[in-house]
Image 1 (cartoon, rainbow, N blue to C red):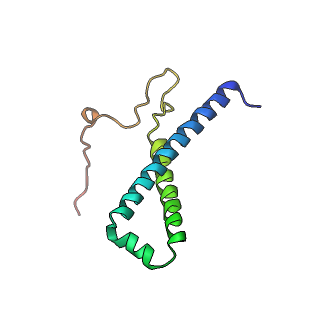
Image 2: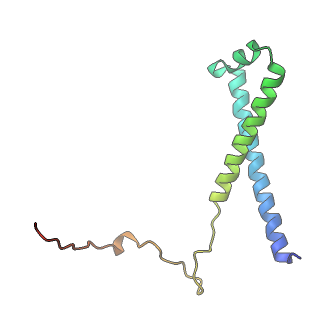
Image 3: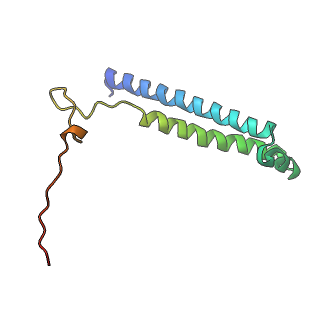
Length: 112
């Protein structure tokens, strides 16, 4: 059984992913429409010349939707600000030192 907080977080994440999916699909379809209307790289001419325009255009729109939708969802997921790097006191863990904290290391070697 799911807890209410867990159920809310799942719904929130689902809505987050759906929103990014829609943004990606619409973006992909707009880009493809511009390619077809302006006949960039002779895309429209090539699709019409094949004689299979009834299947070419739906496939192009489907694959652009898959590509841009998944890319937008991935960008959305990678852009989440996750606070799992905090320790128990709520302070951010210092995994990588700041530039001013760095100091040169002396290495002693023997001559051959």
